[in-house]
Length: 229
Image 1 (cartoon, rainbow, N blue to C red):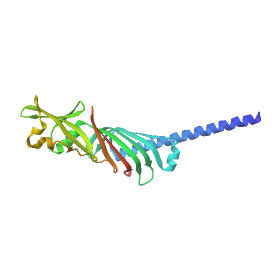
Image 2: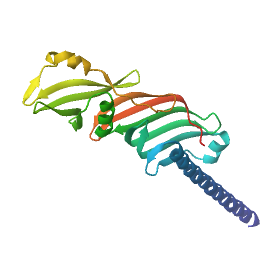
Image 3: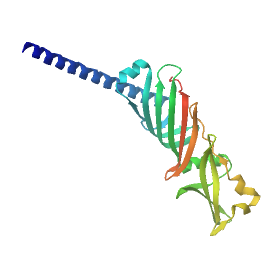
């Protein structure tokens, strides 16, 4: 009987110690996520309260190894060199905790709303109103009292965001792109839309028209994180 009680007592002790270790691990994780949110807010022009989730268990072993396995971050909005983006999502693997801070691999996705792209195009001398129309950006304007409508499709080439002209209509008439005056069709194909301010090592990889604008994705390896002040 005494031996059985000793075994039971040992098991109970181990359970209590294990539970305490789990609680300590979760508390440390919560503190780290709170600090990560503060750093994101300090370093980036985000809109709203960013959300950061550090994955993997136990967390304390990652902390001792000075590298986080998987981290997800999200923000309602982000401004990159004057370009406003919404619905920002970041996934990162191998986030280093010692300087210089690097990320082994990272993926970023964000939506550039039409009004942000309008400002970028205006800086390049193209004053247009942009809307989303069935998977295409629709640029609208007015020429001699007639409504001008042009379809634009984004793409990424060599890390650069480009837009191609796909169709043009003036009033009720659809125009042939080859017949546009001054080679305008060629000038509006492969038009570069600057997206600057990405962290070092992150490059654009894709762009798709979504209901909220243009959803861009970017990826990188051995990404260097900015130092917190």
